[in-house]
Image 1 (cartoon, helix red, strand yellow):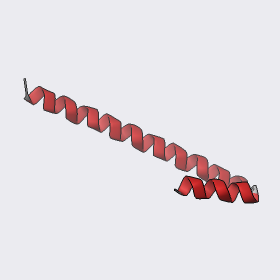
Image 2: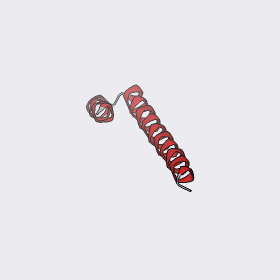
Image 3: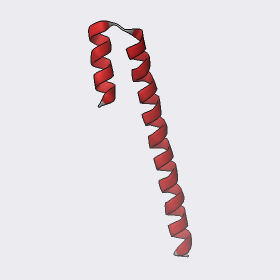
Image 4: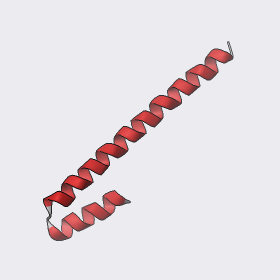
Length: 52
C-alpha cells in the first residue's frame, strides 16, 4: 500500500526522494518475506523431525 502511494507521489511530482523511499520499502518487504519463508522452513523441519 505504501509502495503504491510512494509511486503515485513520485509519478506526479518527480521527487527522487519519494522514488528512493519506494525502493527502500520494496527492499524491506522482500527481506521480510524472505525471513518469513525461512522461519516457516525451520518450523516445518522441526515438526518433521518430531514425527520421525
